[in-house]
Length: 152
Image (cartoon, rainbow, N blue to C red; front, top):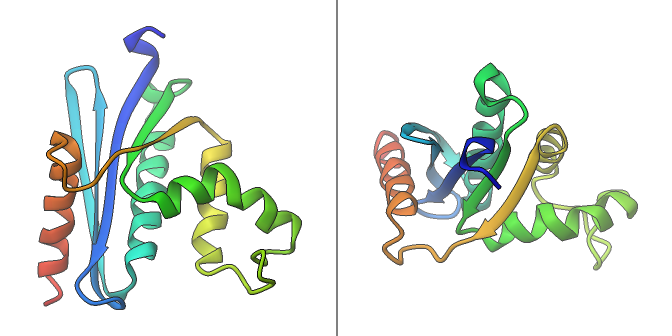
């Protein structure tokens, strides 16, 4: 795949306490152009912030005409989000948004948003180990921590 045909994205989310003040960070890399995004909430959960990071970065990509038609490679340190969007979600939808244990899927509102956004793009989800010195994953974590600090 030619480099011009894809975007590289990193995302991260977290909380101090779970629930507690939370933040998310994302980096979009398009050749030499690097864009950072971040946000947070006063009271949330780690999983909601991980999902929000992925949602907000895909929303941003869809709004930018120069990124239209590009494949998006999302490097994410959340197994929850990666496994959810690439596998579990099909069964959740088939089962009326219930888990294998017949319980309601947590964070359904965010999963539905992420599912709609991901269906509008060509997305490859790649798990990356968190806190392992991966440059842009570490930048996402720093953005996340700055957002959390705003609520503490």
